[in-house]
Image (cartoon, rainbow, N blue to C red; front, side):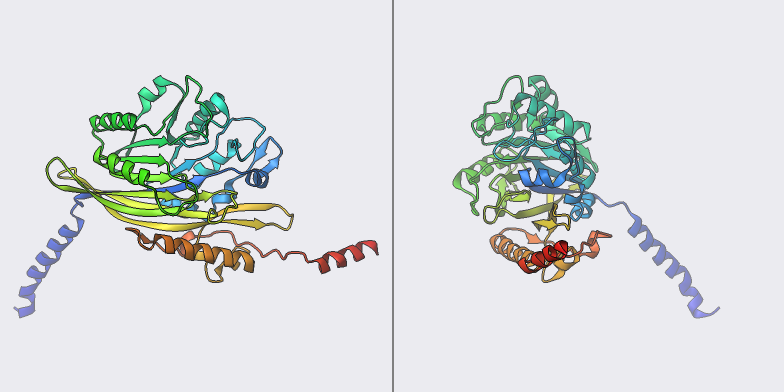
Length: 409
């Protein structure tokens, strides 16, 4: 017998053993969460989505360049900072009333959950609160933060979501509602420490794998979180939360990891994003033209059921207003990295907009450089077969005059 034939059984055994090791079920379950900031509905946004005045609107194009990112998440969550009254008149600031089609577009873009406790929750009164809840649920969203009545809150709060072998509790609160009172029987969750602590106790009794608290807090346009935010975040973590996701300032604020001492004398890693900034809006105040998407993976040991925070990254986003040849504008939420450094020409960006996008990207990274997270760069390839837009040349006084002469002839 040839010597190498004696080695065949050994190689077969070795190969089979390694195949078995490779196909052995993973002992870790994972879920990827994606959060975005404030979704606003200013007057120019409503006008740009309008097809038939007061009757028909289309917001789908607004999210076509972020849709591939959103769809990859196991759960994608956004702050809906408008009301959906279900009928005209629709308007923006100071009391936001948007068409239902905005929520439809968000669902088609891949979002799974909308939180609705914010300072604009009561902008369309009691009926607005109720219709907003009904509309987003009719479109298949998970929703929390506002409630039709006490029974609705008792039955559905904390919100429990089952996904990927995970059971996650979501809670949502706002600092206020711009002085507009909440009219019974509807309920808006306000930031009240006794209330939050009681809700957290209830959440623990439901034995979720993780608890996520989404807060509408802080000072508008401030890049650094204030002491109130820091203190509340620490309390919420001490009450048992794993993640605190902040909204409202309309500009980006830091991402911080914290170690929390547990009853068994071990430390648990937690994380807070103090403000995700704006996801899409018509705001013109400096530094409000964007924010960041935040991705984080939760990991669960199948043997112990212990959940830990895995990798997390931020993705800077910018609001791009594209002017069509018909003199109608379209508002886009853009991931910044694919369109920087001249690549904005892919979507019809002129030099002025390219400079604005580049500047916002640079500024956002500067403000997040000391945060306990890192950027995930997105490529155009990752966005798939996205529409390419033509650059529409702006008319100058000279071209306008030439056109006028031609008409007269």
